[in-house]
Amino acid sequence: MINTNSRPVDPRIERTRQVVLAAALELISERGFGSVTVEAISERSGVARSTIYRHWKQLPDLMLDALAAGIERSTPLDTGELRSDLIVFVCELVELLTSDEFSQMAMALIVESHRDPAIAELHSRFLRGRQQFTIAAIERGIERGELPTTVDARQMAADLAAPVFFRALIQHVPIDEAFIDQHVDRWLAIHRGPSHT
Image (cartoon, rainbow, N blue to C red):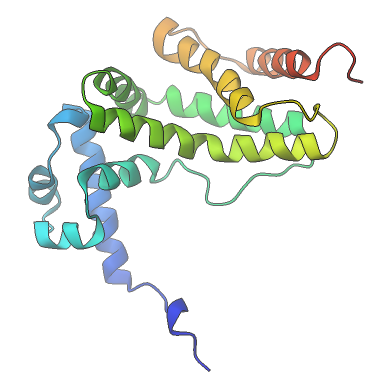
């Protein structure tokens, strides 16, 4: 029996989605989140508004997909060791935050989230998406005994990322491999506690 639920995606549909997402990213980078509309995305992409609304029911969903395009992992990373996983995640975050295009969008997202509840929700959803694989790696580390069972994986993921955001977006201080190694080791030591071996 043929499974009709696993039919391949029409390449034309996928191309249309990619064109729309690219146009949305360009507009977000140029104008900020609060000034982007479906009408503007339609004009920039050449895709009809009705077609855009068939793929995304709401503008925040479209913008979230645009942000995620090309920067979210499609599969979890698992090196078999928590420290190695976290170093890879931090390296990827640094690369993302120090890219000209995304650093501008990240700052706009942070600033505009304080003024617009819809952007604040978008910000929250984006952060949750970015953290999901880090949280999964920390949970695996707990299961392997690399961290105590009392560790809050979600909080540890936030604690790991926050200094990187501050250093990259606020201080504009270079982040090298030595800093990343020291940062990961410091946070592992804090969360493992003095009695962990």
